[in-house]
Length: 477
Image 1: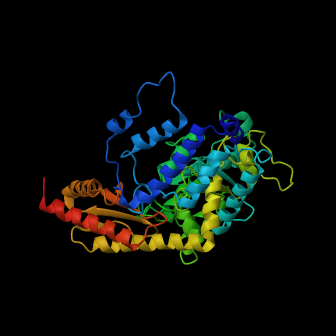
Image 2: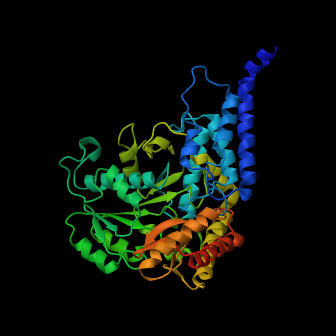
């Protein structure tokens, strides 16, 4: 009788215990985050060594597998979901998104086909519509949900590649790049590595681009850009930036994009985190003109705080997006209101990664997204003001969004002191900023982006940096 009931339930007893155990362990982990150190307490050799045993012949019951994973992962994880984690511009995996992600895994849907997974498609289409609306981008734009900013940039570049070559009579999807017309590519000197990777993946090369000079905040200089454009002999692909990784600054879209329009080029914007400021009425002026671009890349696992992985590409004209991505043929489907997920991404098989973002957006609403982005920008300014008031600390950027570039000391010893301060802060484990390089200096980079970050967290970071500097000055090597 017990076996019959277990079989009818769809789960064995051990499988049911495994799922219950995983859910309880996940909840316990999130509840205990405030009490955890901000960094792993064991190193790679020890942590990896717990898992690198030979694979057994007989296997292990499901519930024991989950118990082993939970036990052996202890101490080997960063507290990236903690509001004390200020590193790498990483969102903190909002709890409602985590809960929805559990459903995604349990449902086990291949979300590449709307016919097979209509509910997943409905939620993902809603996410695309909502984000386009939140960011005040053209309402008829095409969109695809991808793994993150790097792939979103790649897809945008490939849509641009299709359109620019098609305008010259070349079908790149059919004929490839051998013998294709030239596509000039312009990008700022202080662009992130992601669009350079995107250019490599799209076969356009990262080293053959024309790099344009930038100002002290990492923004493309309009005069240098015009000179670079004048040297192009074909409609160019131009990659602009919304949110420089160290300063949070924005390229002057209103000045640059009209220049590209004069030459029938394509403008792609890497807006992984900075594009979210467009959702906030009092901040959107910092991105003036960004709406006039042709494509945009934005991360959902950054400022929206969706669980990994989640990114989005948005293309003003959906036709080149579908032509460059569809594995069913480079054409638009019949106009039936039908939205096919695999027409907008490089994957045919994938998890329903948009569902956690659906849950978060449903939870926050427009007002919640705006409040969160605005709060983080205020906290970044608060951190900059606090640390720069300490003798021996300098903030190397204007606070344009959520990034603060912090350096310590002066002269040739400044870089060494900055790195000592960063190590001291990280080793203490109360907060966790990360390293960067800016304006010829080693920096401590603080990224304010976790959904729960508040003034107390910002003040703790400032205090830890100031205390670490004083300690390092009093305890020279």
